Image 1 (spheres, rainbow, N blue to C red):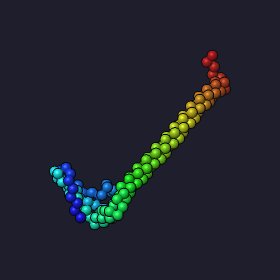
Image 2: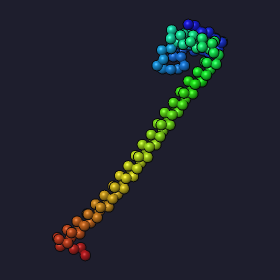
Image 3: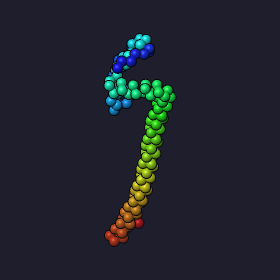
Image 4: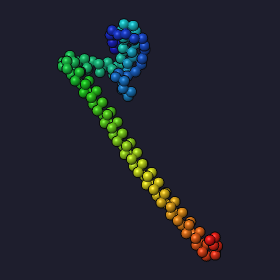
Amino acid sequence: MLLIQPGFGLSIKKGHMFGQKDSQRKMLSIRLPFISIYWLNKEATNYWYECARAAFNDPDWFIENHHAVRQAKRKSTITKMKAYQDAWEEHRDRYQKDIEKLESENTELKRRLGEAKRDIDAYKRLVGGDSHA
């Protein structure tokens, strides 16, 4: 199917209808000064006819359907993005708590090691009879 409409541009693009990567509805867009030509494959043509028939029978169908589809996509994208951000914040907070816990344990172990070393040195001096005083 060929669609011709007024428009302005200068490009040739091969892609999918509505930019969906996994869609079978493919098209070739040729934009020339003052005219745009779209060449649609069979699936895209069938979809176009279905939309045109529905719009002819119920003029508000296409607008409502298109609006609903856009809203659903936007909501799912926003929901997914918020869920990702929440999960990332939770992970970051848990990681920060683990780091703080490990740092406090490390500090405590260093303190205990210093005390043990001091006690060992004192015991060596006491047993060995080395008195530096």
